[in-house]
Image 1 (tube, rainbow, N blue to C red):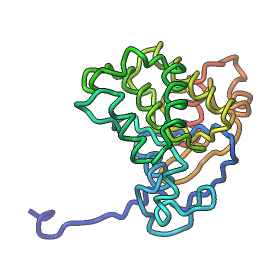
Image 2: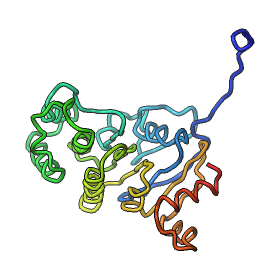
Image 3: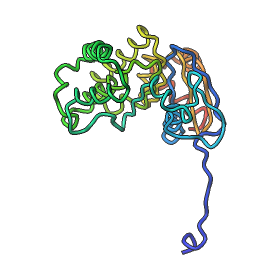
Image 4: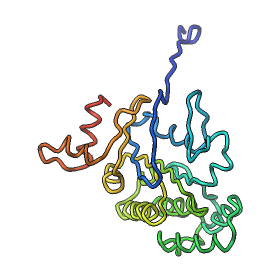
Length: 244
């Protein structure tokens, strides 16, 4: 009854004065416990959320103010959400996205065929999205995010819940588009093997603050004194150091 008549409130800052810069062509791992602010950061960078304060530019544009120009240059994949149309075949979703991004048909055809080949999507193109397994859908999500050839890719837990084969395929695809097309990647994940396989640089966020921003190789040197080279051991010790 006391809570009903005299409720108490607490202000929680999802992001509290964080600051970082990512150079073109980097793959940066963005890690932290649940609720640390990873997804909020990605949503601000992609123009979905407007922050209460501070400044943010991506390639010279303010994401939430110049959203139409901004989204034409980025790709976004959320592991828990889909940008594909649930009841239509995958290829129909691709065609709709081509219209949305106004990609010329000849350029779209070449890009689509390259992505289909890279991710092994040919058998899935006529399958309704709702009938895909999680691993199949995530590969289609990656292709959908790259159809308009963005220069920046935001990935929010793209390998969550996937089997080993699907994780390896997605890691290889990310590595390829970064190496061959120079795509900048910000990757949030709880899978430490994603970090070890893809990221030279790691940012740790906790309680709305950037707690660590540096090389993954430096982390291995710091925590590998007793030969514990497994990535999950290293990240676990990093979390313990910052009481996360």
